[in-house]
Image 1 (cartoon, rainbow, N blue to C red):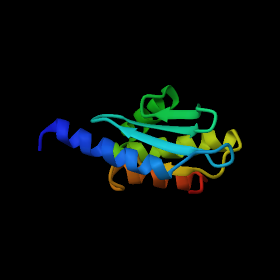
Image 2 (tube, one colour; image 1 turned 45 degrees about the horizontal axis):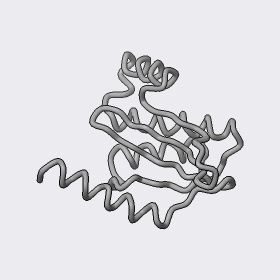
Image 3 (tube, rainbow, N blue to C red; image 1 turned 30 degrees about the vertical axis):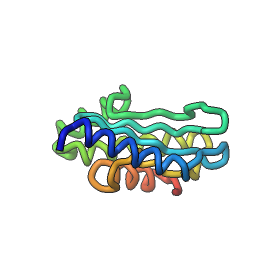
Length: 128
């Protein structure tokens, strides 16, 4: 399948999901984007249009922790790194007083890195 077609299909799925998923002040939206090498997550209040929390595998604190864990041999791949990003995002959300979110997988299938990030956020204390 051509890459353009694959991206168009994902964007169509994303649009279909976004019709149903809305983030509010009480229950913001946890949106995910994954590239070939990195994973990004944001907690967004759609009513005001503000990003409350953002975290990725490139965030300095997360990057440092991933580097330490890779040296120890605890993190071997991108799926395990996504779990760490989810856990870190949940800690930041807890610090801001956010406990419940609506999960927006961004048109991606719920497996692999997307699932790992969601499970990391749940283990960090977020509810969805």
